[in-house]
Length: 266
Image 1 (cartoon, rainbow, N blue to C red):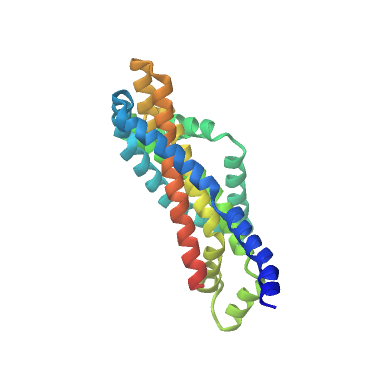
Image 2 (cartoon, helix red, strand yellow):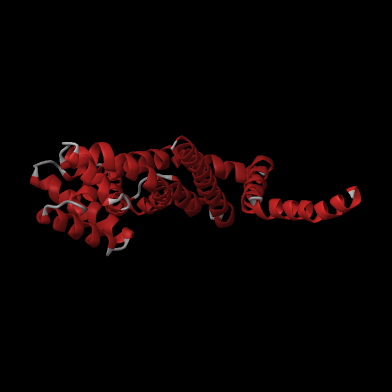
C-alpha cells in the first residue's frame, strides 16, 4: 500500500514542481540579467563608464521633475475627478471638457503649447517678464496639466466602483454629501485605484523624457548633448535605456509591494 501511495503521490509532486516553474517570474530574471550585463560593461569599459557618468548628471532633474509633477497631478486629478462625478452640471461639464480636450491631443503637442503659448500668455497677463518662469518649471506645469486629466479619469472610475448604497448609507447617518465622499467613498476608492495610479507614475517617469524638447537637462537631453559631441550612439543610448529600465523596474516592484501591503491590511 505504501508503494501505491508513493506512486499515486508522484504525479502530484511533479505537477506541483511544474506549476512552480510556470509561476516563476522568468521575465524579471531576464531583465535583471540584461541590467547586470550592462553594469558589468560600465564597470570594465572606460568608455561606457565615462558616458554613464555624463548621463547621470541629469538623473536628479529627471527624478525631481517626476516627483513634483506627480504630487501636483494627484491633487489636480482629484479635483477634476470630483468635478467629473459632481451633481452640478456646470462643474461636471467643465471637467469633462478639460479631460477630453487633454486626452484628444498628443502629449508632445501639449507640452509645446503649454510651455511656449499658455504659460507665456499668463505671465504677460500678470505683468511678469517671460524669463520669470524657467523651462523646468514650464515642463512641470505641462506634465501636471496633462497627467491631471488622466488621473481624473482614474479617480472617476474609482469613485464609480463604489456602490451607490455607500452614499445613501452616509446620508442616512446625517452626513452631508461632501462628508460622505471624504470619509466613506474616497478611502475605499483609493484602495481600488492604487494599481492604476502606480501605472500612471511609471508612465509619467517615462514621459518625462519628452521635456527634453524644451532643453531641460534631464537624462534624455544630457544623452542627446553627449551624442552630439562624442557620436557614440550605441553606447549612449544603451546606457540611457538602462537608466529608464532600472528606474521603472525598481518603481514597479516597490508599487507591487505597497499594493500587497494594502491588500493584506484591507
